[in-house]
Amino acid sequence: MAGASPTEYIGHHLTNLAAAVGQGPFWVVHVDSLIIAAMLGIFAFGIMWRAASRATPGVPGRFQAFIEMVYEFVDGQVRDVFHGDRSFIAPLSLTIFVWVLFMNAVDLIPVDFVPTVLALFGVQYFKAVPTADLNTTLAMSITVFFLIVFFSFKAKGTGGFLHELFTAPFGSHWALWIPNFLLNIIEMLSKPVSLAMRLFGNMYAGELVFLLIALLPWWVQWIPGSAWAIFHILIITLQAFIFMVLTAVYLAMAHEHH
Amino acid sequence: MNVNATLIGQAIQFAVLIWFTYKFIWPPLLRAVDERRKRIADGLAAAERGKRDLELSAKRADEEVAKAKERAQEIIAQAEKRAAQIEDEARASAKAEGDRIVSAAKAEVVQEVLRAKEALRNQVATLAVRGAEKILRREVDAKTHSDLLDAVAAEL
Image (cartoon, rainbow over all chains, first blue to last red):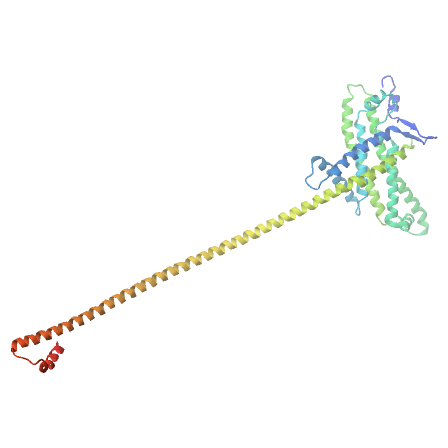
């Protein structure tokens, strides 16, 4: 972005490609986040579907063995935190881990590459990392939140869940109902917010650091750039892993009786 | 940074991916891995069983060999005993046969001697009579002297 000031450069790179779908500030969609997320979803889950549909109980090929490794990893993690029927929570965890991992990995594409290429086609703004968009992470964490609520009702029954909302953690005395309820609501709401903010914050900050590095003279960029990229590989994997494990933990808590 | 309708789009995508994984990715992988785990367990069990069978049959084979050896020893001992017995029997029968032949020969010899003696006696009697006839030059009544002659013959 020759000619632009650093602030303009960073601001430009952190602006999503938006399209209005209705009236008001809410009815806007970030086309870049949606498209990249969809492409990565189709790609990653297409690969896994290919492996799964060809999976044989016999000697697995390298490709199948690799997918099975991911499967075993996720299943093992879920088994550690959740004791019960994993038939839904394990696939959910796999979905989260793989999708978030792929979306985070977009961060490793050089920051100027995608916007520059797309600028040739007249696309003005493009923020390629879907997880550096709060909408993506919040969408996932809210979905997880609804699943937590759903499984709480399912595991404890409506009465049991409501009873727990008002009586745990302090006690069942009537004077404690309101404090209990408030605390539980705060706790429940903090789960999706913390999930979304953690992932979003990490990826947004990562992106920002890459942008700052990109502002350095070209001949020195490679030193902090490669260092940060290597470190970022850890963050990408770790954040995907944390999102997955916390989801499993929250759903396990939803199944627990107090 | 602003939260907007992207949220809805991403949530839908997320839900679709969860559904897809739940429906099409997880079950086949689960099936394949479980099935393989079962096969491996079966294989290990079979190997264990095979090992045990092998040990068992080796033991049985050893027992059989030992038994066969014992039996062979027994047979050899029996055969040796039998051979000795046959030898003894053969020797005994040969000795008996020899004895029999010898005794038969002896008996025959005795017979021959008796027969020769008889013939000799008769001839001597005849010769004596003839000698007497010639000596006496007399007609000797054979009838009269036959008693005498018989007595002489008996004495011989």
